[in-house]
Image (tube, rainbow, N blue to C red; front, side, top):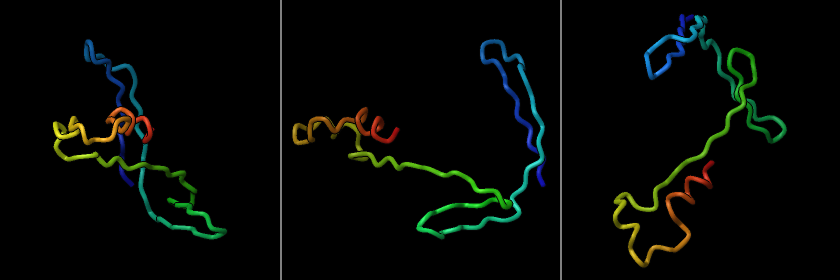
Length: 83
């Protein structure tokens, strides 16, 4: 078990608003694939997991202004799609 401390601090004046201490530890992790589902169980509890990957259209940002780059496939659209 690990002691985990979370503090909520106001950025403007660095004043601490709240704090909570919890004990946390991962003892077991199990992947359940029954009934064509994909469920991760941590310490016996099912955990909801969802994710998305963002792949940039080009590793060099200035090249995305190339006229051959497809219109509509902007960085904003890619990030909106990921959300």
